[in-house]
Amino acid sequence: MIPILPRMNCDWIAQYYETLEHLSFGSHLERSRFAFLAEVRTARRAIVCGGGDGRFLARLLQANPRVEVDFVELSARMVQLARKRVASMGRDFQERVHFRVGDITTFEPRLAGYDLIVTNFFLDCFGDAELAMVVSRLANWGTPQARWIVSDFREARGLAGRVWTRAVIGGLYTAFRYTTGLRVNSLPDYTAALSRQGFLLRYELETLGGLLHSSLWQAGASPE
Image (cartoon, rainbow, N blue to C red; front, side, top):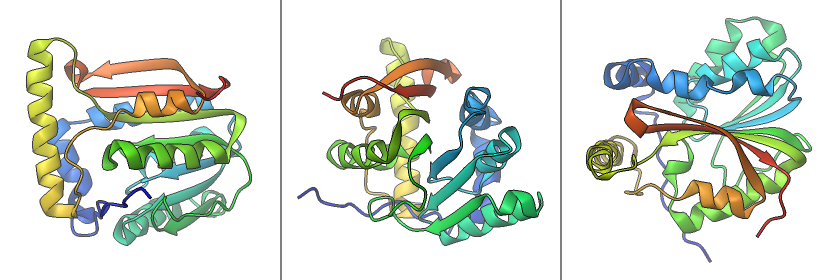
């Protein structure tokens, strides 16, 4: 059995998270999250994992007037912020979202057949073995043509790039260990995990010298 490590819970920092993010990275993380919104305007059923305060959720609902969303987030305080954000947009938007406070490893989907899976700055909360299980669960909930949006940190290529990006990532893991209880301390190989489940990389974008990586994946290949 794969051990389930304590996941990061952002309750303590939820109300400060957006401010801290902008102080640390400006608007780069937001741009990374939103990089491929234009490519998923035809999605009808989506799951947003670890959606935080709902900034991506709000943009998705605005960009796609027919999508229904399951929003799964471990932090109850973050879900409160996301609910408030969507409520301010109007009742029509609220009715298209089901909010769930909980862990993706125990979540049971409400909607049948997601054609959009979203994991922005989420997969880095798992070790490689647990990540394989999580990616497999999500992939099994997707349609045969499902698309998968990923935004996350990554070590840059080249010696100099690896040195400074590894230092930044290590500092982030240390900070989240003390503020959220996260016990993972290195980036998992999520690209290999998605490929093993039959997802093909369609588009990718690197920013901040390779520290941030956004990608759009498409189901369709035979799983390894």
